[in-house]
Length: 327
Ligand code: DP6
Image (cartoon, rainbow, N blue to C red; front, side):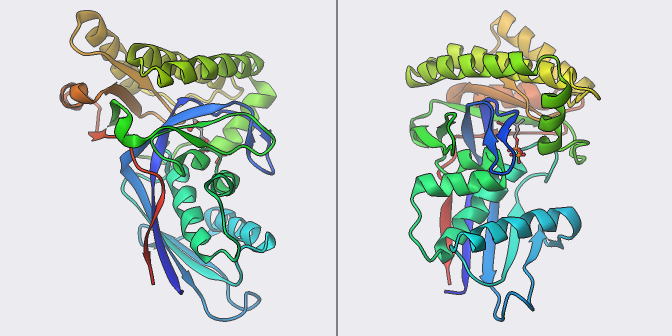
């Protein structure tokens, strides 16, 4: 086997991961729960390079552009982790395609590392369980662990956490409209931002406690498929994370004026009975609108018309990360 292609969907957390208990292994300081998306995907082809790893180095490209500097270093270190664990051997060429803007606060590291881990697993010298694969994806990026199972996935706190499926994609009665507000790369990445929040935000400890409570309540709401409870909890949890971010010094202010406009409109739609949808926002300005499947077209229509929304698209719950081709 020389070449493997795998695909994974991005996921949007309904209970957010913000903070690390252990940076080396990316063990999160908050439990998290997410919805995997079917339209925002990364497709990654991993090709074995012939020759010894001492003389030939791994190569990386994203959307056809060769990656160098910090981005390539992070991926090379990730392959080293697999090599050091004795799972793979030798150098590889990794080529990824994203169906959405990279590094703009739209969870590209989640789908990216989940797709990469899934492709690498096909080269593994040892069999890897789904649980171990999720743990390995987490070592690349914390949120990537949740893109391995797909559907609604939950990652509890533990020493070596893995995400597991709570509701399979086709049984989730909701979807999301992603309102893309801009696509410039984010100012401060998640890893650095989390460390800054831990070190300087006066609300960090309160955030950790809130996240634990919200996670417990969310598990119950999701299992009961109670949309209103899920939406209210997701929106409140996202706001609590952003409160912690904004109070970080210097402030991590990921929202812009369009983000706020969407939030105000959304509250109006709910109040007027136009549509019941809820917002959740990651480390960027985009707004992810959670709605019942039957309401997604209406939410798309409303969101697309808002000034400053560059693009809005419907995402249904996405499948687990999968191998597409082996050659
Ligand atoms: C706000 O998974 O990108 O999207 O583990 O440092 O790679 P690293 O961070 P990452 O952080 C995601 C943060 C978030 C919330 C979430 O997805 O849970």
